[in-house]
Length: 248
Image (cartoon, rainbow, N blue to C red; front, side, top):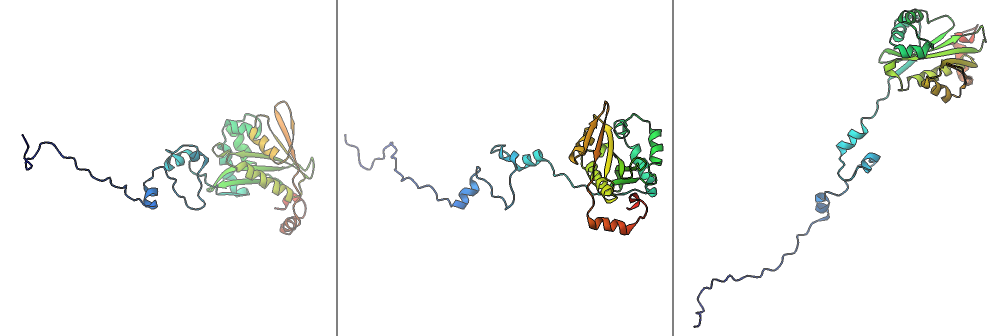
């Protein structure tokens, strides 16, 4: 039996829809939505080696946590110490712990002995310079007059607060000591420190000292460079007539 033409069949007629072309994406949008793209940095800004080796999931926060903040420069002032600085000198020597005292005096000493030494540290003919940070004395270099042995020879000793070591105070004091000695015509500087005092050994070798090791101690000898003519002229105009130690 023939099916009428106007009869609706239950079969679903599938309509063919032409495939749509993918939407056009501008290069700017493609770069913005691409998670693996490299972010542009301002000129002069470079990634650290830690961020380059950390992989694609490395974040800037992780980089800051790995590298840490940049160390702040020390606001340090070095000057000669006088009688009015006696309280600062006593406070500095009393702040030294047992290990620092032994390193400074090459022996185990008591607080009473340290206090007596600090009160008598500013002797006539000696030169003592201190490193001040935020108004506090953190390091001391003493240049002792040993003219009875040699008029152009001096003995040096250093001390730095235990909490302020390994940040450049000792090196700054060493440079000032060499400058002062050269300015005053001191041709030889002698130092004595314990053989396990690696900090003093490092400083002495940095400035071309000659070392002679004994059983427990090390004797270091340095020869400061002579001052330039202008510096020597300023020293002569400033002061002294009898002995180069007094020209400061």
